[in-house]
Image 1 (spheres, rainbow, N blue to C red):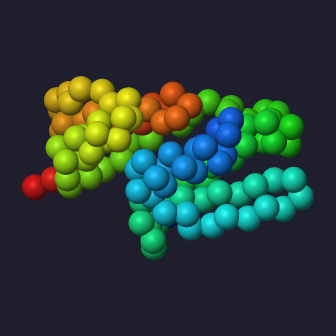
Image 2: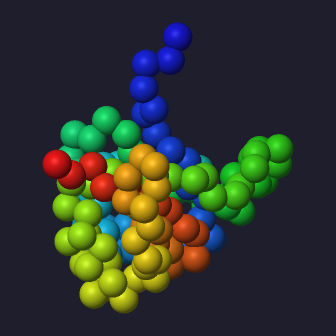
Amino acid sequence: MFTKVGQIMLYVDNQDEAELFWTEKLGFVVTAREEMEGMKWIEVAPQEGAETTIVLHDKEVVSKMSPEVNLGTPSLMFYTKDFDQLHSDLKNKEITVGEIVGMPSGRVFNFADNENNYFAVMDQGE
């Protein structure tokens, strides 16, 4: 039986640039960083102690190790209680940010990382 989502694998072209985007632009923290046998492991999270982390994998390395893996970007939905402030902050950091859209489940906007992968944010406030 599954109990939670522990890690999300995000396949990127440049791990170092992806790490800078997630940490410097979005304020995530690096929870693990290792290099072993020609492979670099970079794990980030919204904060220390977060239950779910994102592992920034090198697309080229993964495709050689596991050619059957779909290297497309997973669809990630982040939650925030500071929805309007986060939307404004991301725009001010010159991140590509979409308009706020009303959905049956709440307000949502999307944003793109440095490799034009898109992610969504949902309002969890009040």
